Length: 220
Image (cartoon, rainbow, N blue to C red; front, side, top):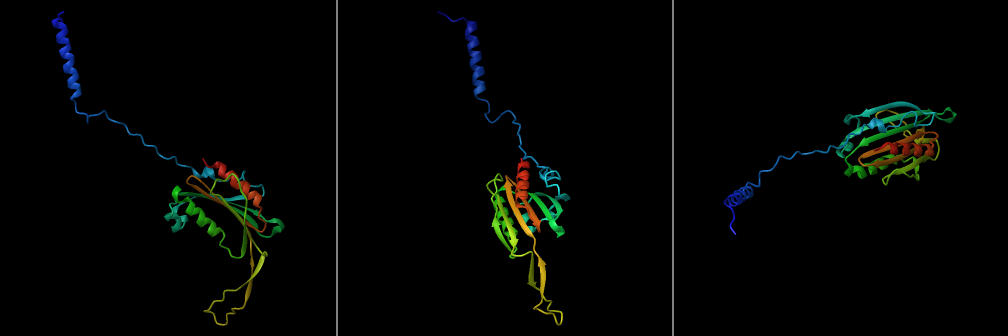
């Protein structure tokens, strides 16, 4: 059986095309379009407590963004990136002083969050005139810390710090110091870190826990 000349020529041409394709430079590839995933930027004002979140007897006094000028050198070294703060006040029962709620929100490098939380707790427990007890909290993540500090009396008599440069300064004098109660809740989610603190003559820890849960729910 003889193969026709036309069929033979066609086979030779196909073989030549195939071989030419195999000998092309393998380094020549179609251009690849790179896709960069940028982390979403959180508008911290949306995480802040509002007037409708707090008890009716509290009034918003301040709500503002923070800059690097508002934080300490240690915070910057720990990777502080952005911040926001709110403050509410209310007359205390009996008209003696006022209660205050302060919320601090900050964005840190997630790898340093544990260090930030430890330092915040240490600072929050630094008043040696207060006795601190832990508060049970739920729904605030695994890093939550909560505690309540109370003095043995609202008014403490403490030695006056006499000025050694003033002649006749009495080192034995005492002064009356009014001591507020304080409750602090610290928590984080991802790279978002928050502290909510209530101070005053009559701190309501149940209210503070409720506020912390509302704030935590706002974090995406």
